[in-house]
Each structure stands twice: as C-alpha cells, then as structure tokens.
Image (cartoon, rainbow, N blue to C red; front, top):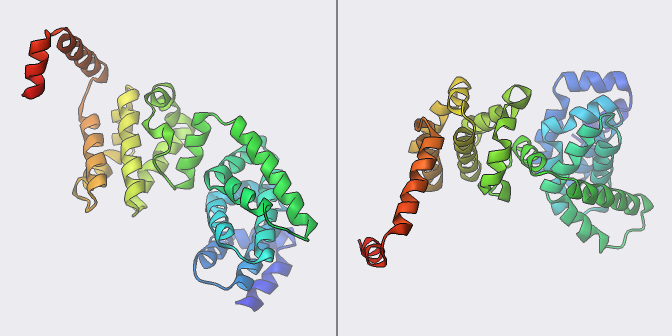
Length: 295
C-alpha cells in the first residue's frame, strides 16, 4: 500500500493524471482507506495525495462533495503525529485558498466550523511546533474560520450541516423563527437540501440523523404551503412512514410527528384553532382552570 501511495504522490502532481484519477473514483477510494485502520505513514501519504489534488482549483471546489472535510477533521482530532497534522492543515488551507468561487470557499469554512476544526486549532495553538508552515497554517485557518462564524447566517449553517450528512440537534432545527423564514429556501437548486434529507432517510443508519431528518421534513411541510405535495413527489412520505417501525424509540417518535404533519391539510387553520382554544382556556375562571388541571 505504501508503494502504491508513493506512486500516486508523484503522479498526482500532474494535472492530466489528477483528472484521470478523479474520473475512476480515486478520491472516494482514498477516503475509504483513510476511514479504515491504517498506520500513520499510510495516513500521511494518502492525505498528501488529497493535498496535491487541491492545487487544481476545479478539484478543490469539488473536494468536499466527497466529505473530505468531516473525514480529515476526525483524523485531525485523533492525530498524534506532527506530519499528519501538518498535511491536514495544508489540505484545509488549500480548500479555502484555491477555489475560484468565493461561495465555495465560504462553504468549506462553514463545513470546517461544523466539524469542530476551530476547537482543534485552539488545542494546536497550545502546542510548540518547530515547523513554521504549521504555525502559519494554524493562524490562517483560525482567521478565516473566525471570520466565517461572524458572517454566518443560520441558513448557511443549516445548509452546510445537511450537506455534511452529520445531522444533530443544533439550535436551528428547533427554532420556529428559522423555519418560518427559511422553509421555502429548501426548494432552491431543484430541492437540493430536501433531496439530501430524503436520501439520508433512505441510506443512513444513525438514529440521531434519522430523527433530525424526519423532524426537518415535518417542519418544512408545516411551514411551506405546498410542502406536502413536494415531499410526496420526491418520495419522502413513504420513507418517513417506514420509520414508524424503526427499532429506536426516538426515530419512531420523530417519524410519527412528521407523518402527522404530512396528514394535516391546513396548518394555518389548525394554528388558529389552537390559538382560539388557548385563549378560551386562559379566560376560564380560576376554579375551572384548577378543575381542568386536576382532570
């Protein structure tokens, strides 16, 4: 494996070979090996291959479609070897510097923030490095990631989380304000984010991811008038219903809530009814309220 990696380290410096390598699904292969159990030398060599690929702006722009950032962020947090740390930081720097589209660089920054790279950088800052490149890369990344956090809209944060496939209960999911303002934006780019959520329901095994994806689909339907129709068209309703029989109780619960939202035809009418009921209950005399509470 080390011999093959060494050959790739040399070959991938040449643009023609870079594109040929990517065309035969080379990036996915490198990442699949990196996710397995390999020693630090092989880790270093394979990440070096990714690094030389990122010198081509087109490939640097495409790179995170293969989940390069989450995988390298995990390796960075476990890394004890300076050479592995150095080459990962160099890849991250290129993913910000090399793309010609500012929007792609921004997306990469947000992905790094969500993968807890800022936390790793603060830990690395405490260590003493003789290598000036590492120090320079830590400073560069810190500056860029901090700036992206300041500039981060809640929708940018949400979109990056969905694209990473690593859903968790971050604040945006449970924010009614977020869904009121942003539900229609899930239709952008031919329903790109909705398609990813539905794909996660189909392919992911993590109960947390399935729970959050089900919840998000329910909130989209609740806040976007044609949401029910869109989800049905994209095949999401069937997948949510299948999760009603999932072994994890949290997944079953979120799937049930989502199915209920898919079944309700007029959310505005339901909202008005609930408000009316709440208003009536607050107008009840104290004794009646107490009786209701006891009941």
